[in-house]
Image (cartoon, rainbow, N blue to C red; front, side, top):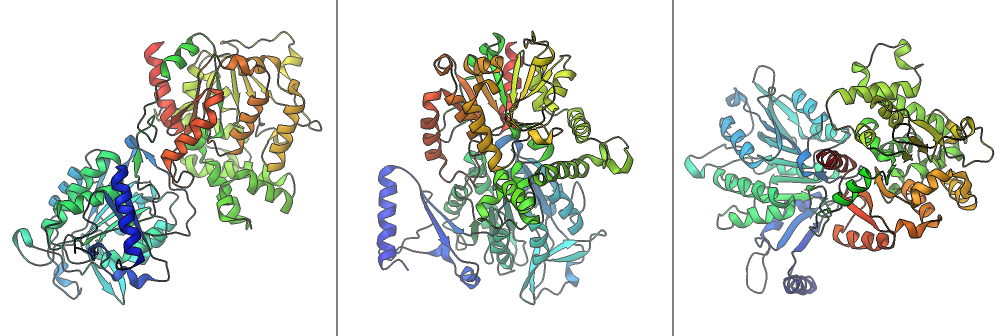
Length: 624
């Protein structure tokens, strides 16, 4: 394979990466129609010029790279939020199982201790422990959302189908088809980010006892990757327990350093390179960056977010204006991308797959394919279903199963449920800030509810972006002398409210009309809001910069008057949640975004909205 042009190109790539002091990623792409090629031991590739192994070098990161028809985004999770599930199945009647070989007892405590040691920095749940390792319990746990799944069980083939040997409620063997596991993972809202399929001892004794399953569980690797699991580690052949143990320990130690799955695999492989079965662990991956987690507030280049002192100073001085995006409600309601994907699937959205996550584009299709009011009514119906599914058991009794309860009332009740759980709730954190004006593109009244809960008396106002719309009475009409204050703040909804459907900016046409309207007539935005946007520090919370909400808002700000006064402030921050689906090269993306925002003095915070709000809560709480 490396004797011709491919070998020349590979050696050139190695030399170039070494001269620049960077690691070289080698991805072997095997199409779904060529599954037989996974049977080749690619990890044993050697340089034809000197016979050295190519893939035991920590600077060469190798993976079997697999595409997937699954369009769910592969979000990179914050380091402190990761959850791990360790499953060790040890049926009591292994001697009764016809697997084509003797099955040795599984040392449960040894395997669990290996998992505890390797995943010490993660929130670990164990089966057995929390429950018996049955198929039902495994699937129930997976539905709650895990980032790492460490599975130890015997495996064998039945009619060329991999079988996992789990337990039943009595601790006896309960075979589970690999295809069944794959199907269940496919139906999850969020798949595990890493599945580690370990092998069980079946023969031998002492330090060199080994598995004898011929790596049958490795056949699940490509299937799991294709169904949406970003990374799968599996044993592609018989492996000694000594090699497996040393590899596993080194892998999780390296993973704990920087979250790079392919680097951790290379490090672990180098640790066991002198062992005859060093090649057995195989990595199947569809992560572009190889990254499993990130540290919130840290840019891809390693720089820490350092603008908290100036931001808190502006908050204390009453010179900070929060601008709230739709992402602030993701934990409560799910993301706009999830809504778009659901609509695209239900209504057979015909455009390119990568457009299926754009709510304005999918809503535009529905407005034409159905009618203009349809996406607005469907949004209300979708949010109602989501709230009842997620919080129905915790909500107070209601007639008709909540079908006739106003959506804003359901939202407020669900918000109260989350608030009572003691989590750092974004709306509550913002309501603590002594700011007189909040600008929001989030279409619910939850921010006003949180302000009332904090003992303040907010006024809610809408941007009247449509000339032909019916608008409720404005607070500035009702009370011409009204001026926003800390005790009586203004919540200004830029893109509409759910309970005023005609006010919503939802489709692509709506966004164009909005942008044209506010550009032609700046008086559509009240003067007190325009002044706050031009003469205070702007704190963006809950935006993704590739979404229409932010792009339209940003262009509106840049075109508005008072741009020179904005230069006196440091504006913080657009939340960039490093996501595989939108950021292929995080470092280059960082340089591009910093250049894009340089003239507007907007500093970037790399992390999720939840991470930003948690840090804001801590920083504000420590300085006020």
